[in-house]
Length: 299
Image 1 (tube, rainbow, N blue to C red):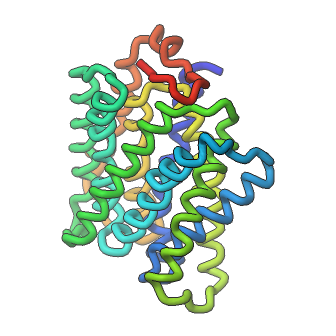
Image 2 (cartoon, rainbow, N blue to C red):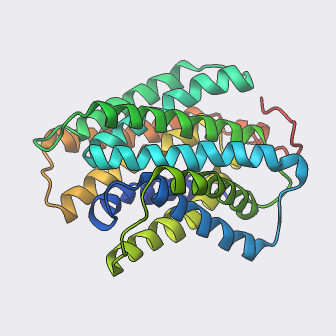
């Protein structure tokens, strides 16, 4: 499969994730971030485990739970909090900062050199996303902002460590391990920290099904596949498709305004994502091939 196909397929995942904001606010009960995150992760993870019938070896349990916490448990709880307290465009803009965080974390944890073009593309992309949120419905909530920044840091850490630790299994099994581990972390916290969910309507169930089956099980399989095949910074830039989708859905489904300045921001995001993919030398793909040794370092 060509690198272009890998990029387009991987970009599909964050594009779908952009629907999380509108689904959370329009289809799910308010005030249950931990419970909803658990219901999104655990059933999807168990379903994938049933399909793959591949359990993590004992040596991988710690890594599976750490990655499941970063990529799902902590990230999704903070994502739900940000989605409850901020407009989708604002929450997604904070999430786009993970592109810059990945560059810094990859340098510290993997020794990846920091390239000026990569930083420039990431900063430009964030500025473009920021333009997307300019509108009369934009508001700033301190708790929501803190949750958005924390979620971005959690996802960035999960992306870098997912590339550092590549088990000798398929992306489907790797996703199943992490989703199940993340759900198991969240389940007792939901029982202790949150009241029981009210009776769920058909709309609530449909929203959970979308976020679990499509927004988790399906999309994270292709995301982790992309993490293994593409350069880390390039993958993180693809995450900027999420805020773009969130704003477009807000415009189409909720009638939110979309100004010429926001359209300019959307164009900047697309150009910056394209520029970041072009910044990688084609021959680098061979050097970035995934290592299947659990302790291997990726240069």
